[in-house]
Length: 475
Image (cartoon, rainbow, N blue to C red; front, side):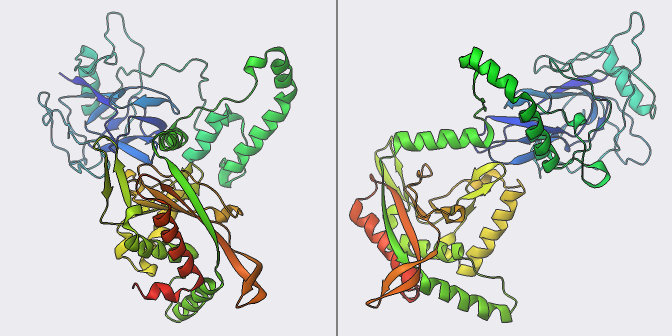
């Protein structure tokens, strides 16, 4: 006798309470192995493949791609039980009963589990139900459900491809049956089309073998917007309340909105800024890269240099490497510097964290920034790489702006902002000259220190930028 076990969306850690289905990796009727990834979900912090802790036949899936599910909601149901392994799979027979006997590992996070060999995926072809026959119904609660049809499904496994009853997920309202697979690989392309209500089956791909690229989707969206512009304007004129595009605050955008709102509510912040002559810093960087070229060493970035300056400044002004425990009414000064840096990606603004930045050299910090930036652009950052920061460095100069008053990355106490470095008229050694000038700004929590400390920190950073030799005194 087989059992239908319900697999729910597991707790993905870091306080995440929901996830969006990006791509199903299995279909109803597929045979899954223990710890085989069955669905790719997008949390507010990363893309995660979720493995199933059961071995058996997928009998139902819950939610279409793009659906947002809370932790604990059903993902799919699997028929497990007395399944004879097919030849060459190397799996041992399993019997119904306890979790271990029914082919369940109990481990649901990527990188964990029993590491059982992956079973070959086979699709069970559904056959019309006969009079008096019993079909498999998805479990509606967390309890295990056993029906005669599930036993028949399990028996179909041992018959090496024999047909048997199978269930399908009810289509979402307004869904259109797909005649076949869509030539799209990237989940970001699928998400872009889904957010704009675009049917990918109507898009002609310009990639290799007809692959649909992001540019194809963007072109189709623009074309559709042009066709409906007149109609939308008429509707807006007749019903003003419906005018405007509504974008759900969820995923990365939702987390950013909540965190920034909380920062504004809880942190009494203040900002001070100063212009600095970065000519000597740029010259020092050029000299370091010239020396490193002979040894085939990676180039040192301006961001890495400024990060090292920040760690030295925080050693002199530890008040800013802190957080506030509002309930205990205490300032908690932190011994390590975990330096976050703002990075703009297709998924939105993220802040990867360089752990133990205070113990790293410029080259080590630069290498870690490069690694984390590449992971951010690929959407492969883990929640652990996005949390735990104690101070943030925000280089908004890459956007071509000079200054900003950034919002503190709660629960941190300060953030250093860096504008673009551009040639400007500057008085140097008593004479007017063209120098490379940068604006530095510090936004700080006024509860952890007063303006004197904040000004001292910012002045030290500016001195290191203007005369990098100042930094050598603290190394």
